[in-house]
Image 1 (cartoon, rainbow, N blue to C red):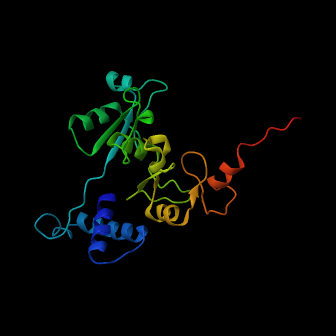
Image 2: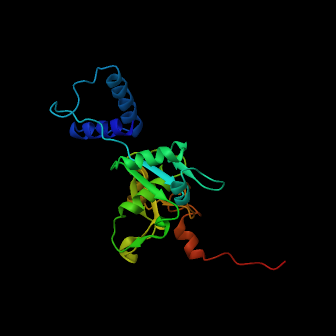
Image 3: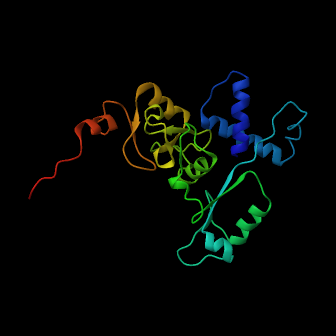
Length: 216
């Protein structure tokens, strides 16, 4: 569905239309249904219409489980958005050397601690973020396509990009943050995005300082 949604988004831009993500997804679902029954045979190379792009599959597996071929207690082998899968499924995916399959091996490269000095997230960091936060970080937003990576701390002041300081935001919420100074409340994962005058806005909390402990 994501591949078809991306095509509908690009088509709308070419035609000068701007619609909601839900509208693109609905058009994508209809196009996918038509293609399934053979009505979409006129799509693809040479027809002037873009074929859907493959979706990226993110796999998380413990290194020892991958070597052993099965999962023991406390180990994980799963596909993001799908759930647990047999280790043989992951092995088959990796054996095909598919450029749209990314593996997060939990005792190999610790993607959560990777940092670099560039503004843009590396491919490893982006994969880690897609696995940790597959939807927009704003509470109540379920958008998964065309997410924009946002720096919690302005990159111009830190010159460092860390996965733990990045949040995926949809275009709407990213625009609220950039243009109107809305911010996600402190924490990780899905959380509220609040306007500048909200008491939970990070600017107010930083000015107030840490809470003062009171004696009993």
